[in-house]
Length: 152
Image (cartoon, rainbow, N blue to C red):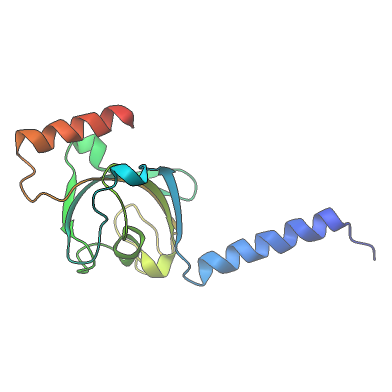
């Protein structure tokens, strides 16, 4: 039986991709980079961060969006307040940077799922870090949010 090189490579790459996601590998893509001279601080565990995000399933179905609520999410990074994929995938991020995370089930909601998220779902998260401030009602904070939303 003769198998073409193209078919073999396609199957090989597909198997590697499926195995990478199933094995719990978090994938981080940077969709908007901040120039190094403009990155005054990077996120680290223990920081209180405010982010805007849009969460989707593999098929593109959006299950949650802070943009829809016009309210950023604030949490302490690395504290377990959010899914592990976020705690890991948002480390070393600059203000204004945007990332696309592909989160395997074991770093998301696992075998239990939650609400519109089925069990063992791979999650796609588009996230922009807005600020380190705790006071998300301040005028300067709201002004920065508006600027980042316009760039979205």
